[in-house]
Image 1 (cartoon, rainbow, N blue to C red):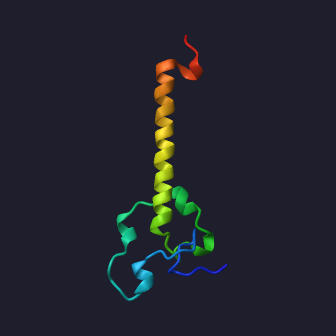
Image 2: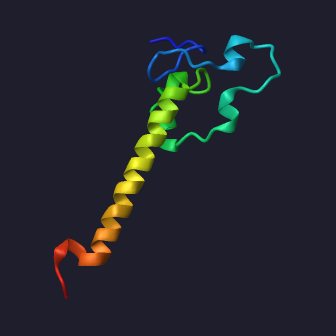
Image 3: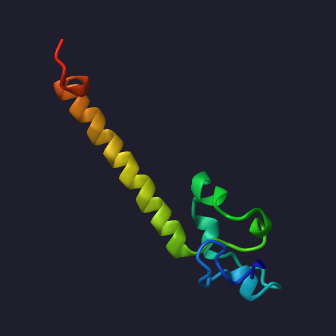
Length: 90
């Protein structure tokens, strides 16, 4: 499978990469202000790494998933603290 610098290597949709659109441009892309979770970057196929940018939609989904997992973990910890681990007291 070949990858286009203008397309997200995860979903295939346009990635709005400023550098791909205008390779001679010295301007910064939207992605330079973002933090990409390592788990998301690990999903990019090896051949597409450093060749095609992840799109904003895939980044936003990954950030929501990460927040959701973090919230679920905090709720579990809070519940465990109140009632004891697995509901056992003692």
